Length: 472
Image 1 (cartoon, rainbow, N blue to C red):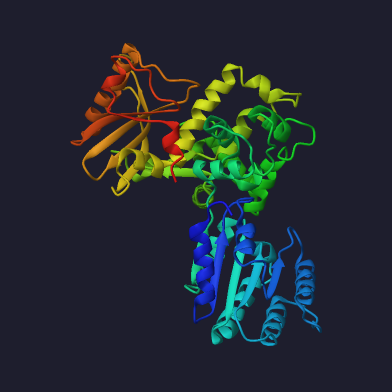
Image 2: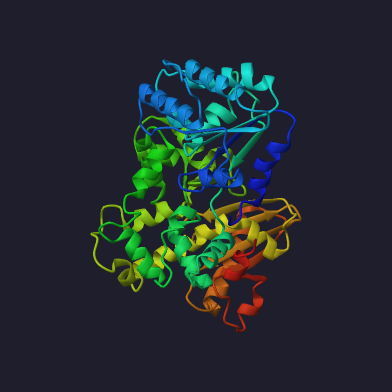
């Protein structure tokens, strides 16, 4: 298995406990939750069940009955409600020999149909029965991250504080994608991996469709711009799997997709043109929980000025190239890579990848152990004589230094000119003046292949290159 060592250890530790364990594993669609659980436990489950997407209560209970039969229960009683279902599961577990018994319920949120009282029944199953024994490991899983968090992780009823482990499974980093590419003999350079990551992010399932021997462009043409491409319909499926009413979430990310630096909550409300402030708070929180957006408060700004920024690679790619505006044509991606639209998008995509690899950037700066606030920053001119300032990335460090990071994607070494050097120092000067910071401001250039050595590049405090982002 590529990566996931810490997650595997957490799961395996449950088998050594002298008490029953309740584990929730959650994360976005196709990130590898089910694979992690099955591989870690060696497919050895006393009972396993997968919820039925969009199934009714009756259909869900019928499938649960089938899972009990498949597990070896000979006489499964009629299941008219979830209390019956979990009681039948309890009876079955009691009939098994001594030893640890792993119960795996996949896509648990899909069982929670309207008025089904499934969560109450699960609560009773755990509190009244499982906790009376020491040999049960209950693992629940689901792509609907917001449901898992609200109904299980943050449950304030009978399941409050009952979880003994929770695992949020994050997408692969560039480092892990490189390991995956090598394991599949894809023959990719780090630049190839970066350009694939700009589109697919670190979702292992998406990467599984890549063919060795095909170029980066050929692979993406096949996946997205061919008639039966495996990921042509993935965008709607992604949001539908995560949220029960995806339309409002899609509306918000669509709005955020128009603004590179993000928007405040009030700006989003104004763009939606509906009075849905309370609902928007929940939507923004759940989108952030699923790593589609990030929120940040710039230095010198108030809480109401918190900015929400879309950072999901796949969603940004969809908006730019697949959002109903472009007809599928043969070799479309191979052609678009030669056009200005690709250059504009790739620069933005590389910025997002840097935001997703802050730990690697901090490591390259030698500040892994330093507490930092990471944000962007902009200055809107107060009169027509001034120029505005947009800073891609600020790392505000507790050791009294602020790294002002400029991020540039290029196909070769990036050249700093005298004019660009003046612009960098103007940005630093405006930032220092407007924020009133007393910390030192050090300019960092983050590029794909470093800088052309000249008299201006020597004045940069620190360089970070693509290789640094591939650190574990």
